Image (cartoon, rainbow, N blue to C red):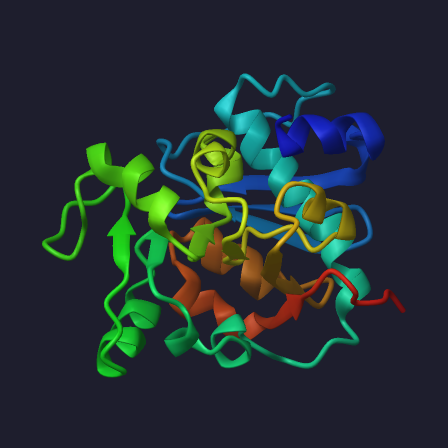
Length: 234
């Protein structure tokens, strides 16, 4: 099942809760009526959008909005978690084959400095560090650690990727687009969700994304945390 379809069925969507929604060059952002914001990376064209009264998950902009909506609505509940990164929690040397879905340059650089060489896929970029997309399914079956960009939710590639992953593999679902919610472990049972949350009423964050900036610019406004299956909510 599409995770967004699951959340639409179980949590729903109320358009009146969305105060603002903008699509910048690299990220989209939604601000809810209580001032909390959620973000989502994307690869679609920048365009003005109206806030829909109902969602059609076959529409890319609607998927983008809903990830932002869920991010803003749910992630705040884990503000008690310490600032963290799954990279520090996992012993990368204990894995035989690491596959990255999404070109995380800082993370890749860190692994390479450690002598670890993940296989990297990103269908929206061209770089010598990337492996051809035609080989993705084969490598996913071999991987025991898959580092997966949360933007796969918005671009609707999540299910296809998950279907090719070895069921014993660890999945690190990561990026500012991640939805921090226990039910997401229905889709990555052997996984970690590494996401970001933001303090409410932050016009600087909104302006940063509207002006086309990416993670390296707006991460100072957020807190990165890791959610594990047994983490409690406060």
